[in-house]
Length: 264
Image (cartoon, rainbow, N blue to C red; front, side, top):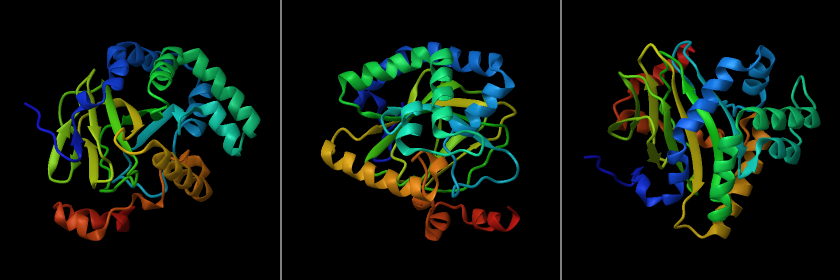
């Protein structure tokens, strides 16, 4: 029986996540249809523009993490690009926004409907929604995501058998297809994929329901403003505060990771 604590939270506490779980196969099928049928140009645009980029979270070796999404800070990606006037090397904000809308409507209409349904009924509680894929051999360095106003849900979509897990504090947790893992990411954590296959989840960030909504909205606005100034391609998801403290590496038995930077 699964046990929960202050950083590994029971998904049943958050009934609004049921709409995602109830449609997990439809959401997975939209993802696989996109991966298998999108043109090379569509794939490149998606990973270049629709994926949040981090300058602080590091991986060991050449194995990578890829991500792309359709909702950031509670608004769809095409609106987000326009609102922040994000300039890309190959696209103006207007062109990027139009292409993002086209791809969202072409490939992810069902996911968008689920998001709209939840946010309409629960006062825009869902903030970020994106697909995250761990490629084989991925080993991410210990870090935190300084988001004290949010929890992060992972809905398992494609989870291979074997050692693909999330280490958080002193625990090792595993994803399961069709089920949410919900974490408080302000605690130090480091995921890995030691299998020979991709692992893909739907990441769903949401406001902590027990915190005053005005306060979390204000915090999010200030945080995103700073993150977008530091790195507009982060889409407000990642920031400089994602670094773990040196004592955390020692506390959780990961002191060897402190040497990784020398080889990166």
